[in-house]
Length: 484
Image 1 (cartoon, helix red, strand yellow):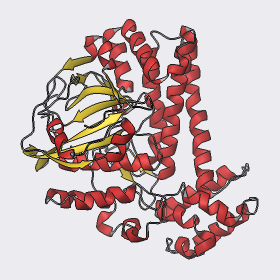
Image 2: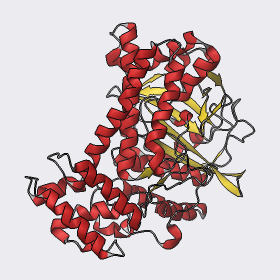
Image 3: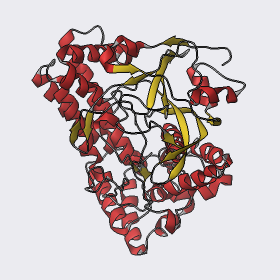
Image 4: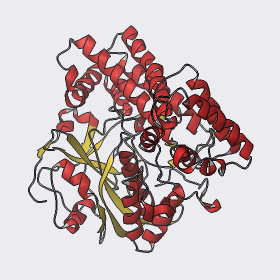
């Protein structure tokens, strides 16, 4: 690193030692740096002239001065069933840095080898899943959706057995916090009320400092309300952009409202309200249209963990904030996508009818809303062509244009605003798969090209039209599992 502009801390170590175990990384063999996020490094307060020097850290062979690796302990509900045997089974929290803007960053090396919480796993990550997380966390960030980030990744020669033999890799994931709902479940169910209180105050001090001066009861109740609201708004943002998480277990729910832990995710292609992106989710618990309810259920799990140290009425009030925050954010998101700036009571009906139409006719979600964003300039053709039955599109467009007569903005002003919320480029699974196949053959240039496109999802990018095309038949509904 050159010209460091950050401070080093490791505040997670202030928690009781039951919340972690010190573990040294298990080194990877002959690791090479695959990609490095210079933009993010600058935000974090440093830059590097030689990215290859990070290969040793990514491989677990080197630690910078001040790094003190720990595997975090947490529990959680997985597919609705409480599992006490969770924790960082392949990742290590190395340290925390504070950038020149005062923002805190956890550095978490994912794929660092076995820990006491590996549960018969090998502690490794594979190239396929590491690329998928790198791509999607950056795609979500540039879409404006709260998320963890990817600082860099390495690949190595070590073979890793999954469904087949795959190549090992590791990701340096960074976030303002790696604390999840599951940390609170661990504290409540296994450590007792004092540990819950300690964890609450730790999170408030680091991530909700504006609440510190409030009296104890008010501080904690306000904090819980803000966590619930942040969770609700996050999932409303997912729904608006057509993102399916796939594994919304409570140990994958960030306490600060970030999108956390990218596994079998997907962005919708042809719209299917009940789309299940994780083929191991046999019951469809985490289907696209169930995500809002699952978000609330996870908040209930968190609420139950807080009951030993918080007033029950305050917890119930906090939970009620979920529905309000979700509905407000979702309605606003969809009005923005439709270019509606002057609200009308009929808007929700129009929105829900639009979803029903997209579902019934399996219309490409992203292409539909991007087409609406250019309706005045390019006409009805790009929208109508998404429908087998053009009359369905014509009837809907007539209703939509009638609604727009209530708007006072000029057409070009409205559509400019729409293009800032309706992306042209999303991370379709087939695009990720193409990049992975090339990377497995040793060619990482397609990865860099896709990352470059995803940095500007709302721009036209005339030289990148192929990345905005609908998926080929083989690229729809790819079979993605939790295996990584």
